[in-house]
Length: 262
Image (tube, rainbow, N blue to C red; front, side):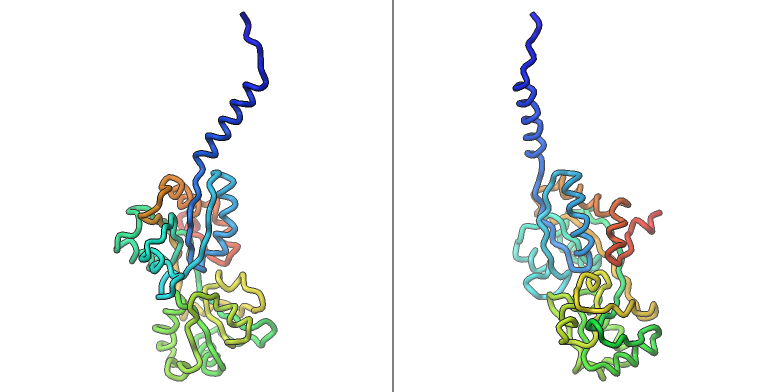
């Protein structure tokens, strides 16, 4: 006897299939430092659409003692699946056993830029000599508490011979974009990764530091050892490092790692 076609059976099968896909979708907690934040905001919806997984995004410095800093959060036992942060800071997490072995991938590199309040005169930083004079002639200077700020305060200012002269009018900004401090008029000059300055309203970006004064910072992704969703976490790390993510990364002022691989 021929079987009778029943629409309801087919619909039930479709619903079961959809339910199976939904059941396989995971929610990943991803914590990123500010340098890669703008790129991650662009890439997260693409990843969610392609995989069905949901990303819970949060932000924190790659280093430092503030409660929001990624190492401090892991030390408290906070459950995080994927970390995106300065490569040197991720090295320390890996050596301390907080990173899943062989899970890290380099995503992008970034350079330090200078910003001033919107509409303010833009100083000359085109050469080392010009940068030195700009620092000496400034009223106040702000820099981040992450990789770029550590480099400026511990290496570059001393190399330029201005550390003592500017120490009373320069300060490290913890756990807040430096651009916001500059936009409020609380610092005349603000130094941070270009990718962290671009999204901030109320500032003008003067430009990158000259190459002789520059530090190139790499940003990498890795999987926390306490991740509960390893397969989905691996998918995300591969996605962020893939050539398909390069356009979004460039849009935020960074150089994708996939460019150097070509």
